[in-house]
Structures are given as structure tokens and as C-alpha cells.
Amino acid sequence: MSVLQLRNLVLVAFVFLASGIAAPAGEPTAEQQQQALTAQSIQRWQKMRFGMFIHWGPVSLKGTEIGWSRGAQIPQAEYDQLYKHFNPVKFDADAWVDVAKQAGMKYMIITSKHHDGFCLWPSKVTDYDIAGTPFHRDVLKELSAACRRAGIAFGTYYSVCDWHHPDFPRGSPGGKTRKPHPNLNRYITEYLRKQVTELIQNYGPLIIMWFDVPQEVGLELGKPTVALVRGLQPDIIVNNRAYRGGGQPVGDYDTPEQRVGGFNRARPWETCMTICRQWAWKP
Image (tube, rainbow, N blue to C red; front, side, top):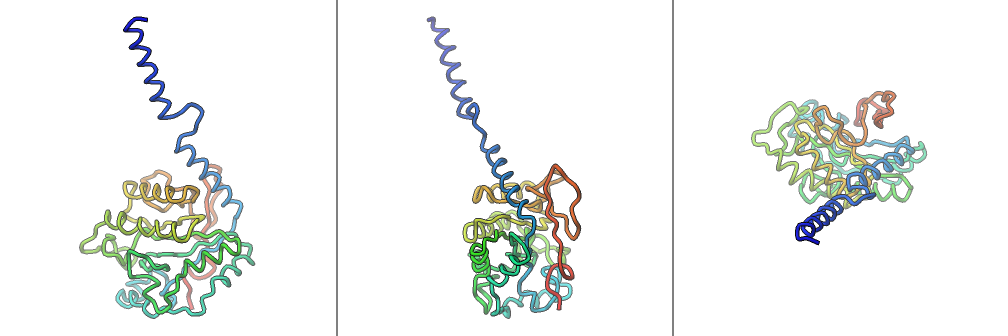
């Protein structure tokens, strides 16, 4: 064998090994594996068909809309102090789950944090949470445990926008005002992603991470957040409101609100329908 033939043989062997490392023949890529796992999770969720979506927090003391009434029906300063009087001593997670189960529901989603920024769990990155109330008890811990005991899948709603947090660009009412010194990148990387991590690690496995109202959060900040969620729990389902997709599909399914979704063979949907006036409790 000549030197040239030997050199070519070594080159061919190197190329073969390199391509084999990148994508071994017959083995699915990491992306394909994730897609297959998500498809299985979607099918499992679709078979459940019916779930309970709970909007709850300190605003229940006023009987106005959660998040949206901040700075509107309720002055912002007053709204932000409601949590100091929030003491729902009759809260019974098992009773809530029993109502869902008797209705034939198979999963439950609760507003871990709505647009007003208040957190129903003791978060390590804020004091604006359940630990700062007279109630103190961890609502998500009790509710997720009750769901597991009853065989009900548990998931969390998490608002992408936060009209209370100083780093999120928009404020109340309704996200129509601007903060004086916002830092959206810091909000996403140092606050939102840390809280999402807490939710999955402390209360998972979750069936769904239900994001909402991304406002100014686009693909550049939003897509890595979804990747983080899947990295923490590969079989989780993510809805279509994690970020503004710029015309491209976001997440695993669509969320028609207050209407039944249309016929669609290409993409699943979940109708979000209230049983009262809008989303939160009204007297």
C-alpha cells in the first residue's frame, strides 16, 4: 500500500467515525427523541379530555379580576398589599381535588403566579409570595400532593408578564404602562427561569407548564426558557403562550379562550372556558 493510499484510508476512517459520533446510523437524534416523547405526552393528555383550571390569590378578598383589576378597579398600592391580609384558613386541597374528580376531571392547573406577580408558593427569589401572608402554608405543595393521592395530574399556570416586578417593562393597568428602569433580560434569566425551575423541581412531575401573556418576550428569550423546561422534565407539555412566535407555532398545543376550538388534524388544542364571569371569583 502506497503512502497516498494509506493517507486516503485514514481520512475515510476519520470521516466515518466523525459522522458516526454526530448521528449514528439508525439511532434517533436527541431532537427526534424529544419529539417522540412529547407526542406520547400529548396523547396521554388528550385522553384525559377534561381538567380544572383554578385562578386564585389575594385578589379573592376583593372579588375582582385577578391581575387585570390591579390599577383599575383597585388602586395599585392597595392591590399590592392584599397579600398581607390573605389568610384562607378553610383551604382544603383534598376537597378541591375531590370536586374535580367527581366532575370527571383528570388533571388540574392552578395559577402559581398571575400577571399581578403574587406567588402561591414560597419562592426563593421573591418575598411577594404565600410565605409573606398570614396563611404561610404552601398552596402548591398541598394541592400537588392531594392530586397525587387522588390520581389527578397536576400542572402549573405561570404568567410570563409580571406587572408587579420592576424588571418587566410593562405595568398595570393591563400592561399599558411602562416601568422606569426595566431589564427584560434580567427578569427572564434571573427571575422567571429560576421560578419555573422551582415549580418543576419542587412540585413536579407536572403534566403542563401553562404560560400566559408574553407581551414583549420574543423567540430569543422565550425559546431557551422552553428548552430549560424540557431539560428539567422531558415529558412535560408546554402550551403556546411561552413567547411571541412571530408567526411561527409556539409550544405543543393551542389555547382557544372562551370558545371551542375548531377542527384541526395538525395541532391539538385546549378550550379554556370559565364557569363564572371571566376568570376570578366575583361575589
